[in-house]
Length: 381
Image (cartoon, rainbow, N blue to C red; front, side, top):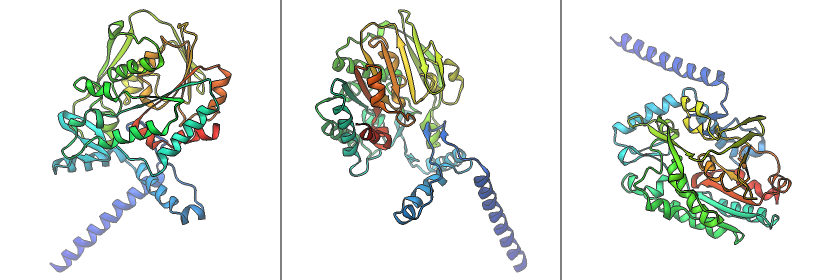
């Protein structure tokens, strides 16, 4: 009997070692991914080793992030953990709340000390060296603040709103801060945010576009001017994949197409490709269906429209802008779309060389506080 117990323990230990060894081999042999389509974000890459990085602790911290992001079958393990958490009554998984009425809501991440001020200084410095450039900053509130009632008990959107106000105070008078929160909050009962994805819906973007028009001085088009087409009603977005929560219904993606025919030329600079459409409808058959809007994120896109307003716009942005941009084509002759996460040239040179008249910085609140590339504007001023 004793021998059998010992044998069982040895066998269990051997199986455990075999399992751990197998995972180690898989992680070692699997090439590192640069981008997570399911989470719609860049993944941590293996940090460079140096004595300085080891001493100050950044190497260890970044290596932990790298191991977490590149772990084999990451999405599967997230799903297993989330299902176990849900069965135990937990309402949060991997930075995502399981809210009321089937909403998955991204947790707000507070900026690190001094980061907000540095980004404000970078924006102010950049604008100062381009005095003729009309500049606007639109930070899209997320579902965590606009749909606060959908959050689990004892969770509020107060922090997000507080930091929005701090950004407003940090930018100079040369930057027009476009506050869309009141307009979004007033329409909270409408379909403004996806339930399974961190983006606003096209309807949410439309209301923000109307608020931007008030600040920029253009007359926004009425909703009746668009033909609202259903792109898909089978969209499972980034929060669905990131959280692992599976007992939720899919979302619907709508496209707002002007009833009056318009012509476009969309140039993807780095890819050296062009299109006559703002939508990549084939992407509605892919996992990340949100990339139907301008085929996802790119370093630089140039959109030439049939507008004769005599104005040119550069939009410095994250992916929240992708479904927002089609609303702007009637008001600008050319729109240059820059994603600082991938763009390697000088933004000030792009503005000067193309005689750009207006600049819009459009980010969602979370990305604005998380994304370090915004601070790089300081090196271009």
